[in-house]
Amino acid sequence: MSLEEEFRDHAEEVQWAGRYIMTKTRGRWEYVSRNRNIKAAVILAIEDGHVILVEQFRVPLGRPCIELPAGLIGDEAGAENEDAADAAARELEEETGYRAGRIESLGEFHSSPGMVTEAFTLFRAHDLEKVSEGGGVEGEGITVHRVALTEIETFLGQKRADGYAIDVRMLLLLAPGIMG
Image 1 (cartoon, rainbow, N blue to C red):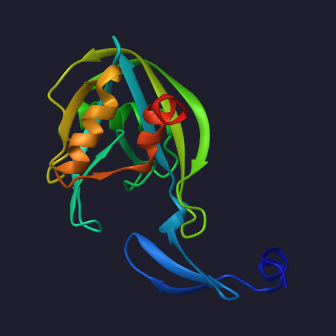
Image 2: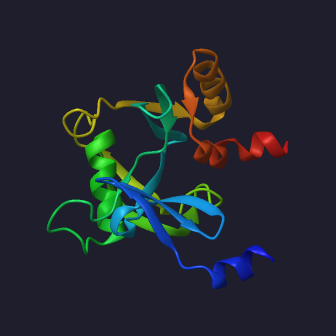
């Protein structure tokens, strides 16, 4: 039986549900979903040849991770219908202290489709203006990095050598070097 046939022949079953995530099965396949199918916004913010990155301790990894700014869409009570572009602009400013003059959607992507249903919309932030120090909301402990694109490979290599995790979306910035 193919996975597609198994998908059609078996109903999705929730095995466990927590406050933010749930584990599910469909036939023999196990995976994780966010409650209420909440999606994320990820922001690629580049200005004057520099990319804006964030560093945040990630409990599942047990170490800090270098990432693009990102956040959940409509995760706050009363904001369930939040526009994805508005969420991206809000998260960019909260996390990095940069305000975008314009936000452009680059499409929806799936981060680990064999294990999680989570999707994110990638946004490109244009016309950046520094309006605060950033750092996220209380308890997030976000450190902002403004890294020259010409130095991204060296920056990430040094962070990796220092024991940091590197988010898969960093491949967007490394692709020219990888293809090279």
